[in-house]
Amino acid sequence: MSVRVFVPADAAALAVGADQVSDILSAEARQSGLPVEIVRTGSRGMFELETLVEVETPGGRVGYGPIYPDEARDLAHSGLFGAESHPKCVGPVEALPFLGRQKRLTFARCGVIDPQSLDAYRNAGGLAGLEKALSLKPEQIVEEITRSGLRGRGGAGFPAGIKWDTVRRAQADRKYVVCNADEGDSGTFADRMLLEGDPFLLIEGMVIAGLAVGAAKGFIYIRSEYPHAIRAFSRSLATARSAGLLGPTAGEGLQAFDIELRVGADAYVCGEETAMLESLEGKRGQVRAKPPLPAHAGLFGRPTLINNVLTLAAAPLILANGAEAYASHGHDRSRGTMPIQLAGDIRNGGLFEAPFGLDLNALVYDIGGGTLSGRPVRAVQVGGPLGAYFPPSLFDTPFDYEAFAARDGLIGHGGIVVFNDTVDLAAQARFAMEFCAVESCGKCTPCRLGSVRGIETIDRIIAGERSSLAVLEDLCETMRLGSLCALGGLTPYPVMSAVRHFPQDFEPRWEALAPPK
Image 1 (cartoon, one colour):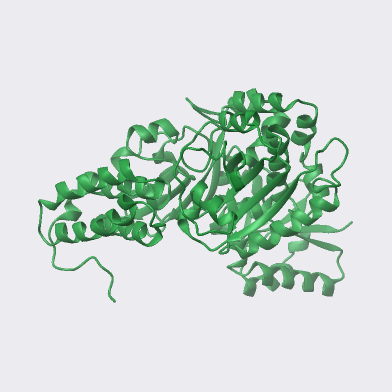
Image 2 (spheres, rainbow, N blue to C red; image 1 turned 90 degrees about the vertical axis):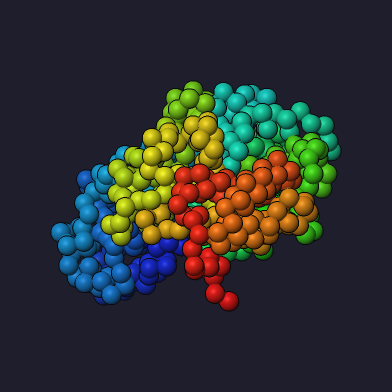
C-alpha cells in the first residue's frame, strides 16, 4: 500500500520552493523503493507553515512545516514516509488552532484534494449542488440563493438573490454570466487560492448561475499577474469540457453552457464591473454611467449576471445543503461565512474562513497572533487600498457589512492589513490619493482631477497650511458623491479615516511625504 504525501502547488508555496520540495521527495521515494504517491494540492492558507508537507496516516494527515528545499532530503531520511517524529512536525493538521477554529465552507476542499482531479472533487462532495439545481426550476434556484442571505463578496455586499432574479426576469435573445476574478486589493488572495486550490467549485457555481438566469455563456475575467491561477484554471476548464460539464455537448439535463477565460492587463479600475465589461468587449477599461444596470444591459448590451469568485463559489454549497444551512451561519444581515485574509505585519498570516461576526480584536490578536515584528499594532486597513484605517480603539467592531458601514468602513473583499506603530498615516493618506490618480480611468472629473488635487492638498497640510484640512474634507466629499464608480467614491475612506483617527500624523514636518525621484 502506497504512502500518500501532500505538497501544495499554490503560488504562495511555490514562492518558497514547494516545487523543489516535491521533486526532492519524489526522488528520495524512488531511491528508497517505497511506494509513495506525491499529491499536489492547493494551500491550507497557513502561510507561516509553507511549504506544508502532509502525510496520510490511519489517524489523519500529519503535517511538517515550514519545509524549505534544503530541508526536504533530511525530512525524507528522517522517516517522513513512515510519518515518524521530526523537529518540524506540527502534528495532525486538522487540529492546528488556526485551522481548527475555522468554519470552512467555501474552502473546505482547498489544500485537501488534488484540485485538477474531477474525480477527487466529486468524491469530496463536489457537483452535489449542480445535481440539486438540475431538479429545480430557474426561479427555485434563485429562491434558494435569496433565502440563504448570500451577499456579494466583492465589495458592496449587494444581495445576490436580487441580482440573479433581475437577470432571470430580463428578456433578451442572449444572456451572460461574468465572474469578476480581477482581485487587485492589497492583502487579498482568496480568489487566487480558490482558482488554484478548488477550481471546479467555481465552474460548478457558474453552471448553476447559467441555469438560474438562462445564460449559455460565461466569462471569467482575471488579471495577468496570476499566471499560476490562469494555467490551473485553464486545465480545469478543459477537464470540465471533456467530462461534459461545459460546452455544446454538455451531459444529460445540462443546457449548452461554456466558460471562456479572459486575461486583463492589471488595471485596478477593471475590478469595477462596467469597466470590466468594456475590457471584455475589447475596449479601453472605462467606467460606464448607470443606468442601465448590467443586469439589464451588460456585456454586448445583453442582460449580464456579474459576481465575484467567492460569491459564485458559494452557490453550490447553498444548493447542496439548503438555504437554511448556509443562513444559519453569520451575524445580523451578514449571513454565511467570509474568507478573511490576514496580511501585513502579522504573525499568523493567511486565510481564515469564519462566519461573519468575529470582531477585529479576535482576528488581529487571537487568530492573527499580533504583529510578527513584536511592535504594537497601530492600525488596520480593511477592504483594500480604498478601505478605512481603524485604530485599536475600534477593534470591537464586528466583521459584518453594517457594523463596518456604521463606522465609515467597508469589508470589501475581506482583506485585513495590519500596520505597527512605525506607520505614517499621513503618508498612507497621500498614497491613497496617488493610487487613485494613477489607476483612474479618467472618465469623471472628481476622480481624475480630485485625486491630483488631493495629493497637493495633503502636501500643503504637512507643510503647515492647517486651513487646507477643510479643503481636503470638502474635496473628499466631492469625490465621494460625484465619482462615477467606487475608485473615486471610496478613496476618501482611507484619507478621512487617517485624518480623523490619527490627526497627529498631519502635523507640520520638515521631511516631504513624496517618495524620492
